[in-house]
Length: 115
Image (tube, rainbow, N blue to C red):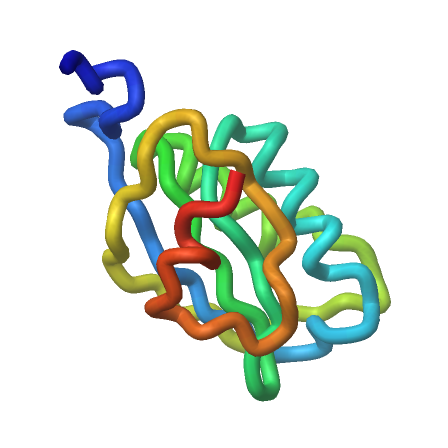
């Protein structure tokens, strides 16, 4: 069985992006989803604890542009105070970028593989 169409590309990477600030109850997740889709990324965004976590996958160039856009283009009243980026597990191609339920367990396959 050939699954190469669903496998991540060699030049792709994934990041878990943890964000604190005024990011809950202000439309931040919807804005992050719109940006991620505009940059052709896959993954999810969820409210967790006192912030937001984004699991994003795509080319390194698109991920970097997405993070810059988050910092520069998210509309008030949302506000980012801190952002931490770390490597994460790649998601298969064809995975959508979704808004996950609040307090999504970060290791949950359901949260990582949503389409």
